Length: 490
Ligand code: GLU
Image (cartoon, rainbow, N blue to C red; front, side, top):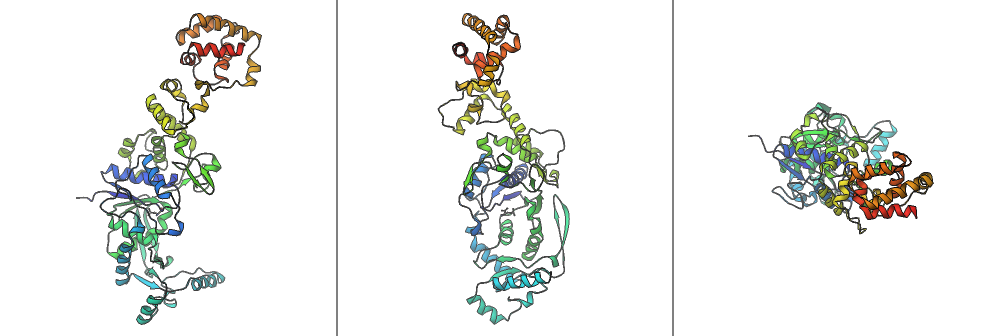
């Protein structure tokens, strides 16, 4: 029987979840759900210096908002916990000892200053210093020293544990997206697996945890591809069989020049984080407060980097799960296209009921005392491409409109005033449905249909924008329409 699919999203809590991480989480989630497997959130917090307060909570909230709720996580627990690496220190200690015992790893006592000196000396000679088979015997470690010297140093000196990279070996491995890859071990160094603070490095903890948590597939960003040869060797050294690997290409800036960074949001004027995030640099925009629906964001993230097989673009999560296939993930970076996201957002908004939109709007909690009704949404839904801006964009639906003075000068003159007077009198007598209001305007129009519409729109909206004029009149109701026309006539 095949092993149940278990995948993990393993962020380091060094800041908020950005679109790159979100897409990685999504692809893992889709693979798990497609195969009836488990999606695990593991927090890789062994580098305490880089930890940013609040990140873990943010990551969890952002995943939940997007509907990518993990099956196992630090807060939910599960059979393979703890799910925070800082709580697994004892486990790493046990496993590093196994590698030392079987000769795959060794203690190194070199001082940081000495290693720096070696680096500088190499640079002077136009070379790069690599701690590996070529020079490890000239350095201070348990391979170059005598047994009793090592024992003494272990008691008195800070040390690290390094991986003993094989001298001449072709390391070959397979990536689901990139295919077969070969790397020469002589190009790699004896990476530190265990630091002097008794914490494992990313590589070591990551491999040990993926094995102990029974992870079957590792889907992560391509920035981790260079680490893969070491990871593969670590699995071999333990005698474990590795999971499948898929390294996904980067999300690029809209102009295609380099990786989309967290600062690019401010630069290009769109959000890159699901939820709001504040730090010393200020407040970062969020998809949520910008009025992007989580389902649209997820839809867009899935398409980004997915080499298209048909022309379908609008997907709901169940359809994404159904269609997901690691082999259809593209090899090259995908440019972030905010307009495309907005287009998808509009498509998803059209699929919501007006009641649902009202509820989502109220949850955005703008706290201004104005209430968005179902009637408002019925009127403008077809024009909406985001939530959260209805009260400002459609201020005239809440009686908050201001008359554009330039347009007033242009459109209001003796002729249009006489039309407005005539129409107002007619409306006072009979205020029917949209079709009737239109016919009545035609009857009263002394300045042509277009100009009459413009003058009426200016009275009701304050500018030349908005939904169908006659539907708007029905929405506002007789009293309000007469009041707004009257205030221009006054
Ligand atoms: N902790 C790594 C990160 O922050 C995880 C990489 C991996 O998925 O192996 O992205």
